[in-house]
Length: 227
Image (tube, rainbow, N blue to C red; front, top):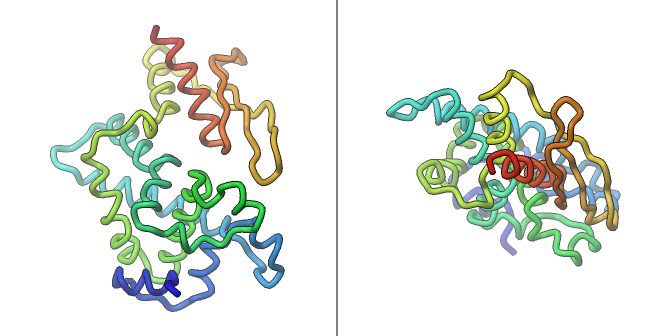
């Protein structure tokens, strides 16, 4: 049976702490059903998010010709948004190693962007803690480096950044996002989010993760404002 360690071997990435690497694959739904697993991958996801931000910032900073701060901000947001991370996960074939609870599996969790994106970040976090940034380079050079020069589809456009840039072109104000409702079953909640400026609702959006709902709210607001 193919394992994450076979995948790492094929990528020529060394590993020392197998438990750490395996934890990156463990969704919270699996921990709820398997008490032998004390931790899910959420802490490693937090670490991986920071690693990804640093790696992508360094990569964009070194591009030639140089990009402006605004260009780097927009492109980085597109490269590391939830939909893009899920695409990287699929391209690398990592989803089959994900450990999910039965209920999450039955409702399509293995193909859900939010879960795949979180797992991808968690694996980056685990690999970084175990082997350092060089090992992270090997993974991200496979998927994120090529994505820098590829046209971005509508799905991975970062509307939160576009909206903020549009607002700040006219003022120094900052928008903020608020979750106003959560519905659906616990294993597949749907979030409803509003984006506000000076307590005025600019747009609304829904999604099966907070990140996606925020993007949809920003898209709604941006499209209304540029009409």
